[in-house]
Image 1: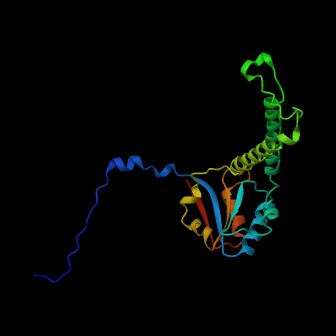
Image 2 (image 1 turned 45 degrees about the horizontal axis):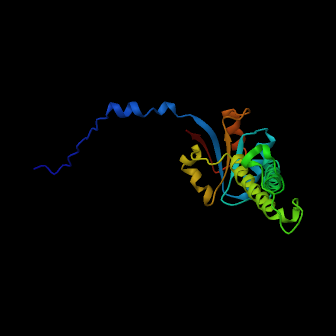
Image 3 (image 1 turned 90 degrees about the vertical axis):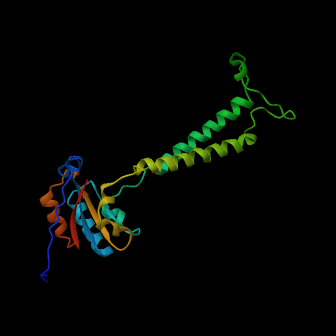
Length: 210
């Protein structure tokens, strides 16, 4: 019996139905990311990207970076105005509710005419007595404005993002910093964008595909 090693070639037959269900050509580049290992490096890169005129891009880091907002060019949020509008609406709603239900009587409305509530000869329109429900509705609608306004302004809930599929980007929650420029940016040009990112001396540059 020969002691020579016998090599067996195994051929795996691919199921044509699998090829038909997976169309690699349909994947497209949706962004280009650059990876950095220090806060200083990513801030310098972000400053160059902003000065280059890009508008659809972002910086990702494992923790908040002090002073990054003006470098990125983030404008002040309108969330306080949304909260103010919600609180104002709640205050007016509470004022209307209390006055309509306890200090008015419109007979033509039948059972919805209101119910004047007499208490020891005190005036029907007694604002101090109405403060609790007015206050509660003000707080309630302010909270609604804050929560739903925040979700709306941040495009949440976001159940999927192509970045979630990028293996390198997983370190954004650990010890790496990223600048991501979307291909939907009007100024995006693959050659020029990659050239700009290379000038910032990143650890790596990758396409983000979807």
